Length: 278
Ligand SMILES: [Zn+2]
Ligand SMILES: [Zn+2]
Image (cartoon, rainbow, N blue to C red):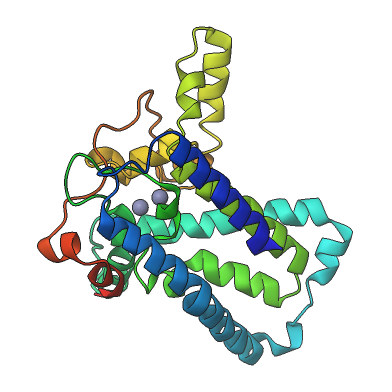
């Protein structure tokens, strides 16, 4: 069910981008499109099932007696459990994403771990062939290095919650997170309409709301080239960027240039982008 709902929304986003001319010849780089196909195939066929099997096996070893023990929470307090799940999942996503973007750690022991996060997340920021034509597209949601899905703490958190019995909460939470993440990657800047609206009440209300939720332009700024690419770490809850990391940056225009500078191998090969590990 989760796959059907998130997949249908993905198709709606593609249709929107197609109708608004995102896929015209020359606009998207071929390596980017190959990367989207490679990452989507790998996530659904290899990484997600494999990481779930690994986490379930480890949880069975460490938490064997507790399997299903939190099921009562979703039976009695579904909405509150769902809210807590989303808040925590998004928080753990932010921790991993922050590690991937922060400066090299002062602690020597942490550096190799940080390097894995940085390398695994780097492909998410490679768009276009290092030229100014780079375009955002909804497929970029799935683009990460192969190791990303194995190391991100939110993936571990969500599968452990599933193991502990939060089945419905996991499904609904993943649908909400999935749909929101897809929509912030889509080339659809509806938020700029509100952020620049001539009515000051509407404009300011939306500006306030952008402190709580992440919108497409806020996330596209994270994909830009320049200082804003270290801002807006969260896909859904901007409030963490605002209150925890101090990394919230609400701009009233779309970024002029997207994607990080690439080396020759990254420009040439999707396989290289995907498989580089360290
Ligand atoms: Zn990032
Ligand atoms: Zn992104």
